[in-house]
Length: 497
Image 1 (cartoon, rainbow, N blue to C red):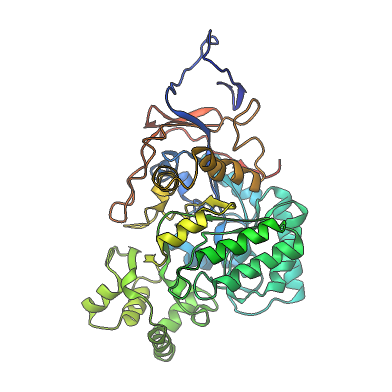
Image 2 (image 1 turned 30 degrees about the vertical axis):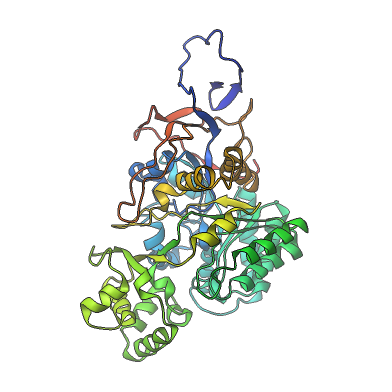
């Protein structure tokens, strides 16, 4: 294969008889040459600019990431609510510092030449809602909704992949289906995606999926379900039923796909598990309520009744560095209080800056969902904190190991389709996800027998093995297994352009 500039020039079978003058040769004998992998669900707003972090993606062959997931991002930001939004989402997306902007074009300029991988922007629903009504848990007025629709259209015209929602987070939890239908209308006109963190992955997971399918049915818009899983004992073992529902929708012509990662644990900010009522009006109001005796008593009463699996909630990050690696049950015993009270005390003392890893799904269910024809891979990776989830550094390599080598669920070709070609088509990234003359030279050379995750829950930042070369836009960022932290060839990509 000959690469000239940022694109593939030609593909020569049977070996080159004569190399072009001054050719730079990357050996690939007995390796696969594949298109760069695309992370369908990334929280790389900050990480894509930090070499020691995005190296974890590069070493898995990931060259492009979709950001703005779960309805939150660092652009477009209304300056009046900037600090509150960052504070709410900091345990997931990190501290952006100056990497924020009011508009997409400004955000692209701010990121500039700092990107180590390509990034694709989404229209973050929560950002738009917070700009109109703050963190209030109420329905939007007609004028507010009209302005949000205009801003969704502006984002699609700019080149976003679609609209992203996080319907279990505040304030999106207050959105009804009517609001979502209105906001997704401009997405349809650009053949974009409605990407959703569903209202529930637990007891109400099937109802949440049905709501997303309603948008696909009524708007004829592409619907993509984020980090699909069944995370509550009430629905454990029902993955076959869920896959049947999704496959039936696809046979009916609905454009529904989903991403998943090969781990039974999820990860998020600890305060995300608090009831919506106590999170209303933003992080400042939330802290006030946690410290007020009356609301604190009400919260503890509700949490005790919920019988949360406290031993499965593991602290992965705190602002002070204390209690990392402990479960909430461990913390409860150490502080001689209930797990709920221990969680509230931790959130208060750490000023909400607490991340957690939560063991919540069954591997058997995840495997069934991965077998579906619409399954792709999204890391949902959160690289921040003292002991993050290993999925940031291992999701793609672990997916290949589990589904190709260990279980033979996917063929190698099918894995490339799900991790590169299909994501490129869903995001309308022209010239990516394929290897042919004229395509963008985002390329990966990988030994399929050695492509394997090494990250674990106890050592989550251990890089994957098996990838020898990675090119982004024809430029090597990983060569002979050596990562070059000095070069940054990532770009902000515009969908459909």
